[in-house]
Image: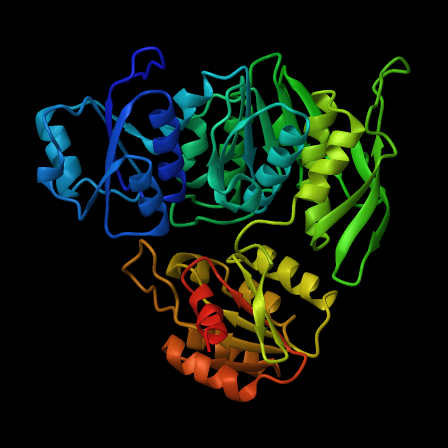
Length: 469
């Protein structure tokens, strides 16, 4: 496998450079003196930012984009073998790396390399860790899968030995990483177009944990079913976290309370391994500025890392005071008259349930959820779970399924979810276009309603269109 060398920058071309992770990696290499170019299907805010930084971006992917001076090509999992650019790269014999392979090699250049994994909560937890490290003066380089206001985007280039990134299990990409610290937030059924079943997913997370060096650290949620199967036999240190009472974890949350917007405050309890151990963050009171019970668990994982790194209490408290969320995570978008509009990335039943439970603790008359299912495979595999989770909303409005990479519908449609909700006595509607949904919401939303646009596709556009009027 080709290996990058920070001390010998080369000419690198990214196929799919506009992706949230790819664009960040391109910026990291540019900062290290590499000559960078890339291509994507169309212009976006991310590609515009790259161009402003001096990176050449081609729109449309064709063989002509591959020039003679390119020494390495990086591509995403979305790029298939029949892609014209990739085919030309292979015809010429140019060395290539996947996005995950490049990210793993970048990580190996840092003394502290933190990889945040889990079916849910990666972006939020990575962002929490980022703010804590910044408040502690640790100047991290960060690659996050969302737009974080505090760093002005999805990438932060530091000049220290500290690196933080999200670690996605899809296609086993995180198995190409070189972490010194792993965080595993949760393990649920997902990406069943790649994994066979939950046991296959758990096996992948087990292999991810085994990547750690003997002097590394695994932070894991003790509420994961049979989490010991993930940790058994590891030579590295293991720290467990849980916000559920009665769980025997190393870090727990006590005296939990919520404000009027559903944001939690809690005391941290750190279990000492030995009487001589110090626990810098024991009994510290944390106040979150992001709503939802699930964010307590995310916060505890970030706090466990801070405890391991001996970060002082004030820096941790300031880090959480600084963190006000990332784009598309229960994000306040604005008000349409007296209707509050929130947007959320939730696209798995567990995430939907957490978001709608959060909404119940947020000021509202009714919770109106506009949901866009993401991929036919996920919809088919978790159909009953989707219906059960969506029942937490007062009104459900369904958009058509966002196909993403898939072409086979597997017989799935949003109307099937709608019908299932109606059979259970729920108020549900289904429309084939965003325009129809927007017209419906203008007429049917009431004073004090909380309108949530939800999904991993382009459903965010509905709320933004309504707010333009």
